[in-house]
Image (cartoon, rainbow, N blue to C red; front, side):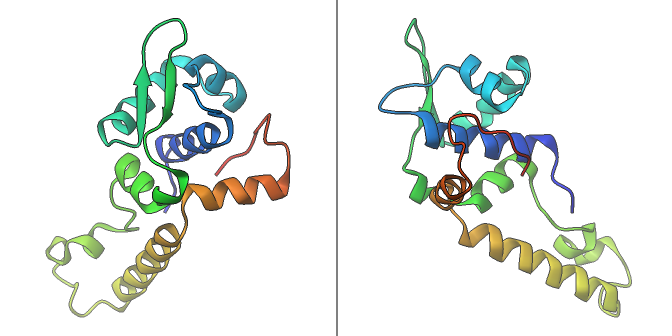
Length: 147
């Protein structure tokens, strides 16, 4: 399973907000600059995050975006599921009918186990966990990484 830029950048945007929203909205241009994401692409990323209630948008001179919930309440499984959809490595994991061999296929059993392991990691981690991990690594004012 390889995450697309939507999942990777979306997670980075939420982490950036958790690190920088000191009581008010954060301008998208600031996030784009820190995260080295084009502003146009960033604008497309925030739309589903707003619709899902993960972030709020404020218009105006002091506008921007901020987290709609606390970082402790935002699980990575929710973020990745929203931006990526299923993380199953092959179609037959989510839909056994996609392959006539599903009942007998031992490789499918491995792909199911792989998906369950990835789901477990994403379900066990919150945005707050990422904030704490980032603080341990340092450089919270200029975050440049790839998740």
